[in-house]
Length: 96
Length: 217
Image 1 (cartoon, helix red, strand yellow):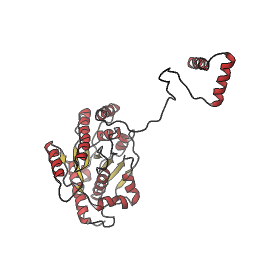
Image 2 (tube, chains in turn cyan, yellow):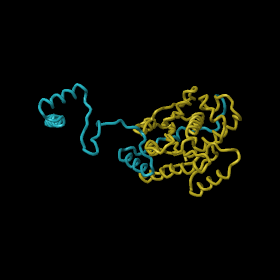
Image 3 (cartoon, helix red, strand yellow):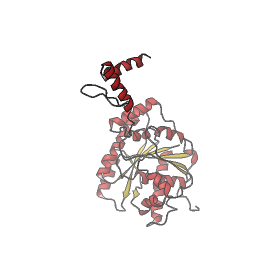
Image 4 (cartoon, one colour):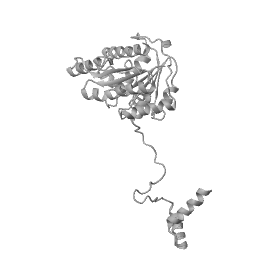
């Protein structure tokens, strides 16, 4: 390109300037943004599985079909409900 | 390295066109320019894919909310300019990018709707200045303007000036060459002639020069 430049840039004048990017500054920025409706628009992956039902607060966890069948058979065999069995299993797990 | 953030929650206000014109003109004038494409529409990336990138220019795409501050910091070197092209919505990505800006440019068409929605970005900049305890210079640039200024344009400009806001002169006019950048890539000196090219080049260079003055001022 041999065309004359309409203006020239002095590279020495383009200096880095310090800007706070600490987690506190980011938190303050997010807060200021939210006050004006600048909220997160990015999709976040669902975590934590199904939520408890709002009425009974029961958890209807999805388990693999074979495991569901084994829990059902164990409930029949022991005369307990599936929920009781799962609660027992949870207690054992959480005591580990 | 000055960081220029181009923000407006209004879609279609001319953010990406402003980013590409500014980037290519600053690069032509000798600066190293990095364009960060934070817009899910990928307009800047599309521009970059259409032709050969002008000398001294690079583009980084798909910059997300969680990465934007880190990405800006990564390109934070002396002698270069980072231009951040944002999405046309009110989002956390916008507010985080503004927090790292040395200059916020708010493009708006000379319409009441653009001015009203663009004002939200101005309010956000003010709020962030307070939250971060530093001044964040901000300027409005009118885009897609006509040779004869409409009454609405004059009214909005007068209102902004009365409020002490910086309005860049010249505005970016509605020109076939500006929209053709997204068809051919490259810069105004490399694309096939579209309308009066000398006028488009003059307009773009004068606008970029005014932005440069604000960066070093």
